[in-house]
Image (cartoon, rainbow, N blue to C red):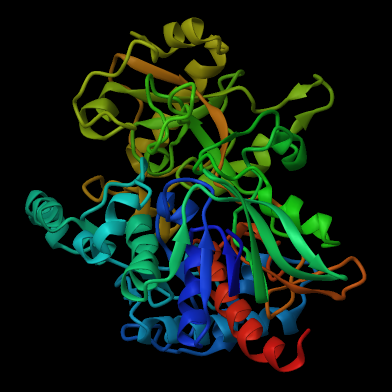
Length: 547
């Protein structure tokens, strides 16, 4: 049966739900359409960081000025790269406005104590105050708790404010036990769960699961709704105030690797991000532009792992797990086929340029294939994917009694690996990495290191046999460089800069034009900020003008 609503949100992740909360509180009739049987989207798989400068929240940065925030973003942007400062400043102000509004509306944004900016102590950076998180009890989601997409990557139950506290070192088991008993949702599940609770449980916004948007309805050159493909056939939804594209990026599309200029790309985000929203908008005249720098990492498919959720006709979708927090732990490194390291492993973003480097002389990718190399001290002390500390690793992981033997078994140059391990171990014993500066960023030391390892929580020698090598895949996070061109109100634009009336976009469907470079937590912040902007414009400005 066809329907008429005020605002249609295509996608049941962070952006779609955030827009639904704002639109509902502005008095609108809202519908969320989610193609899968689960809500939470890419945000549920994320670390749950939200980065907002000068938020004014309790525990926020002492300065609290956008001038300092802009100074820091200038550093992140780097020298000689153009940026629209007016647009960036407008975004930063809107992010503060949106974050404060959502907090008053029941989203429990809290500053993470002692959590610095990624590049602290860079100019304009802070030691704490800009990174936020959410934690909510699972029971508060009601019937939607069982429909929240589980995270295969982050252990929930302990908020980062506790994870980074002295108590985490003295009472780690009690913290985890208390969190499990309360079903405390943290990290990405906390962020996604907070918006699920606000939109679907508390406000009762209607959400259609298993409904995929397959066509936009047009009224002249304006978007007037969308056609949804559901279990019972097609439903035409007329949207009086607009349609929001919040269906994610294109990491699962067949041409994703070519678009990102990498040897191969496996998407680690939920298996629902294959470019739906971009295709829909392009057919309505929208422009797709290149925005943010490439962002991906490396990962491994552990035997038998599949994405959580409903299996398809051929069973579960294979899961390629990013080795995010693992890469910063001691007793490990990453090497190419020559046995050479090529970046600071502890910060996965530092590897991106090297993974895209093509060796024109040798006519091959310079650093792909590559391997994660670790020793038995790593296995005994740290978790690796689904395997806890001390658990045996699967036979699919190559192992050997020496670095040279490991190289021969894995297909790595033996002389190169032996030399690399020797040089690495010499520096690791001192706590220094002269080659790439591993463990020099305070954020990385805090988020990805071993606090019991001194003097450098990210460094330890690879010296205890047996040795292990995991062949790595290049994995995406749902964050492509291409996206829909939007303005400050999240209106989707055409190539000539005119808005497509009635069409909005947020999240990974929208190109990041405010900044080159990477800021931890910015993607989640952009998502709820532009969702807020879209709903506000659609329900106020557009209702007044009709355009």
